[in-house]
Length: 306
Image (tube, rainbow, N blue to C red; front, side):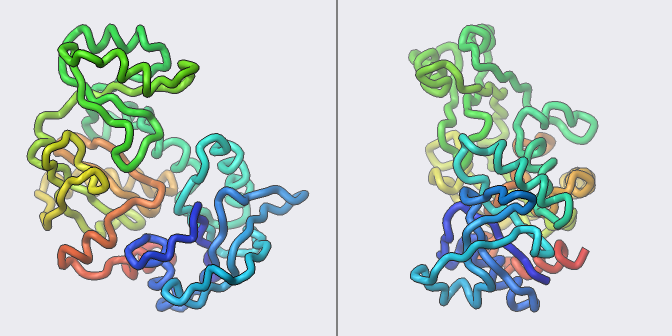
């Protein structure tokens, strides 16, 4: 199979998903190329990008090699590992939608648009519980929510890696300044308020799924911060899912499959689903470090054999 990984940067660190999935795909007999998400372009009826054709190995990749023009429609599968610069997100999504008309795109453009959205999770109450959530770019609307009481997680809708995430309540002396900061100088950025789940103090489970099948899970525990993201200092440890958690993940995995979300990372504080990560979900290297073994091969097999 001709496989094109689309990424923002050609990050060849051994622990990156780009490197892990590239090595796994090559060892499974697939021919792998790399393309740049921020160089996607329309050339009449063809969607192209800049990148490197048939990478021999992520470990021996030479950055000095000349980039080539790649025709996305010439590949059997285009696998998106980054959405790149935020300002051009909709343009790139529309270009990927053209590709999707003729070539398999992982994850699907529907999943990238809707499952990635923290808004959409509020509409899936038939599948799981989700913390009460408010979203607006009008600070006054959100001030009223905070002033009504309770602890809230304040964050940007499209944030990642735990950046721009604050734990606040009406007793937080500068909560108005924090909200205005996330709202932006022009007051044009949306802000989310999500009810704080106290159980998260005991940890949050990251669950990786490939084509609806469980790949692995681990527990992320806070240290001296409210965030459980490993990039913000949280620690990871081996764990297992309870029977109730397995049943929940199975249901959610089937739902993700119907939307074309093949490789996902689910953040779970049972019975709450906090987030569904559909853009380059982290965890493969962490599972390996925790002794669960190298799981990238399973991801490739489950997804590309389907």
